Image (cartoon, rainbow, N blue to C red; front, side, top):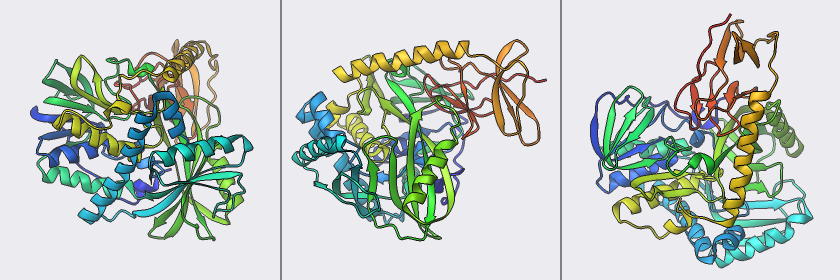
Length: 497
């Protein structure tokens, strides 16, 4: 279940923060947004410390489709209608510039990361989406993107229509970003792993505390931890929701014809080629759902494999994995000043599965805000913005949180614990609602199911063998250790029997 991006690159071994230090910028999170920000700020001569709770580049960045594209589904007509033509232009310009930035940096630094230029396609098999595709093409072309409408594809899928963006790209994200991490250190920056941030104090300069009690004092703080680890200021837990998606890698007899593809309708299906040392493979991603929701989640992998077999003569599926993404209320990421009363704390979150360009945009915007005081794209990404669509979605998403909070408390528990090896169930143990997992050695792993973030009840994820929170997306191992999400404390363990 390891992702190809991780399996094909070396492990990192940066030190844990074990002494207090002073820097110009503290960056929380070692994914693409954090590493890109650290690289750019280090290049501008600022002293940077990057703090990662686990190992860098093992989170969403290592479980992506790795499309470097400004084609984010059908977004431009939506942004124009919701926020106006100027902000739609900013969004298009920012993401097109991100592609160029990465391509130029790869060429300049001679980074070997399987980069290739590709066209990107959104296609539909339904008449219902044809006008939407055509409207998107008109708006995207007006914004300067090389966007074209067509009625056929090179892959063997019958379609009603498709939207093509030219001059897009794909690459290996860890090969690219591991080199940027080395460049941060070469400029005097520091990277610390196994250094989970648990608190931010002060009014500037800020004190950032890690789990082991060490402190980084910084004039500027960037929260690039995917889901903000310090999310009560600005109430970001009410303004973000999390979704999971699934990926399989197929070895097929047929050659992939090139291009990157995603459908407009549901269930989602995304395809691209995957060059490996063993030859070309095909990466297929889709089957999204809200974190902590649904039953029999392993079926999502089966659905993707069935889809692959319909298109290609598949010989094997050597890799599969899942991923988690945060989405804002209006589908545009939050990049910029966290709140008006914390002027030098910045946030980058809510990439909605399009983090390769938006993470790069984050690094560029945050560098500009810190070094220059402004960015040409700051308005469309402004975290404190308000749109009518966000207001409507706020009600929908937070009503869903409320429903899951209450229903989780009321769900019946198993009275007699019957669990097979490799399975997890919710049961009553010593008067507590507990998550019970039995491993292959018939050993029990028992945790309190109350999420340590805001008290919702976690649910069993049979596909990843984890306990997932349906309210805000925190995930925990079978022993209650944090995997991802806003939670800052592990689940409590229960001794059993």
